[in-house]
Image (cartoon, rainbow, N blue to C red; front, side, top):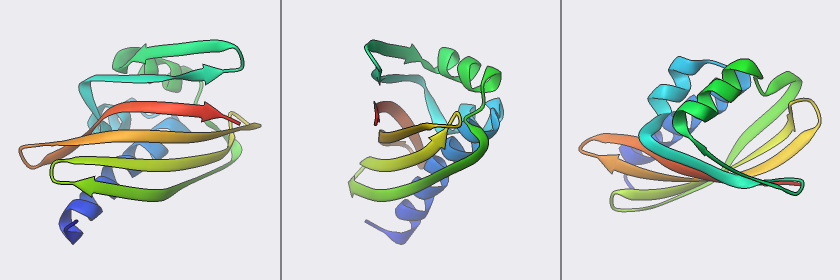
Length: 120
């Protein structure tokens, strides 16, 4: 993985972290590909949400209720594909998540194409 790619993947994932925490639609829009989707369970409910639905959710209910700590714990890249793992503690006040992001490099631009999450 080149330093440039690693830095850009980190930047894009950080756009997600900051955008979800603050409910910032512009940051989330920049981070995600137009066809991106989110999948996972919250308790017994499965969620499958497209980009517009996720941005709407985050704008209406930002993740940082005052005690959110998010961290990129790993990035793996092979060519134009990458996976980043993020942990969130205190999302929406009292929820802890592990997020798995898949990213693809389109021309010279990295975008998140999917997110799978686990609520602890």
